[in-house]
Length: 142
Figure 1: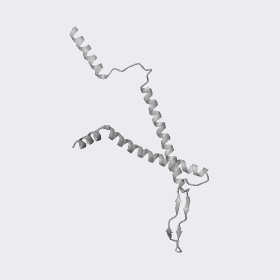
Figure 2 (figure 1 turned 45 degrees about the horizontal axis):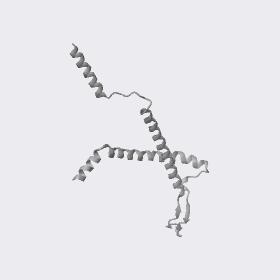
Figure 3 (figure 1 turned 60 degrees about the vertical axis):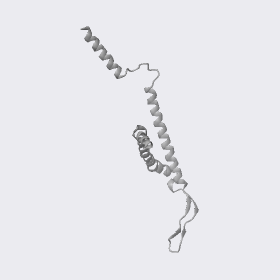
Figure 4 (figure 1 turned 120 degrees about the vertical axis):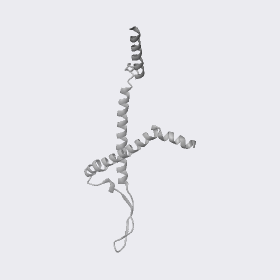
């Protein structure tokens, strides 16, 4: 019972929910960047390098065996390094994008926590208490 109670506390707290939202957004972001690389960046890159698609690059270790009827008896064995290049490029672009996004957030956070700014805002509850004190003072003076 204690384990279930601890799990409920963990699940209801923001940490788990924030993490789940981060995973969902990260997955969607990964798909967007993968599409950017595969559909926008790689085709012109392949075109300029000789009109080929990186995904088709491979080293054939064993050719496919075909019988007299033209049917494949055994599949070819190959190292598909072109697909690896494409996935590696996806990773690099995602990593740089996340790096720059976090860098931007850190810049914004540093501006918010500027040590040169000596003004300290008064909390709302203190402001309200000050107003109440002033009103009571004014009322007692009448």
